[in-house]
Length: 136
Image (tube, rainbow, N blue to C red; front, side, top):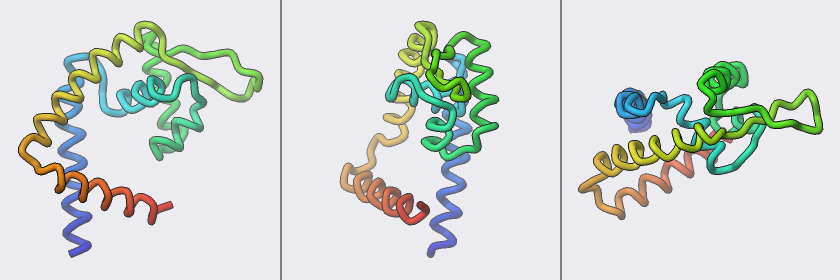
């Protein structure tokens, strides 16, 4: 059962990200970029370490994605007291990208979850949260 559960989860995750990338392409973002834009919108100016911990991805990977977002002027560096610390935030252009992308993501997720009972979604969410805690 466990092997099948996790195998199905991995297959779903890959398919989900692939399809979400197709949808986000309409606003010029990829899933990896969307996660950072979303995080910055929710939490404000942050360090690469904070983002890395939230996404659970190595800092060099986050740095590459952040550099791409910076090249596109969606994020900008923020002066910090500690010169070793790189803080970033969304630009006005980045905020507009968020507004466009959130509509795409919400519509995609709505279509995906349509006709699934709320009780089933709640159970699935609780299960994911328990498994996440066990990985810490």
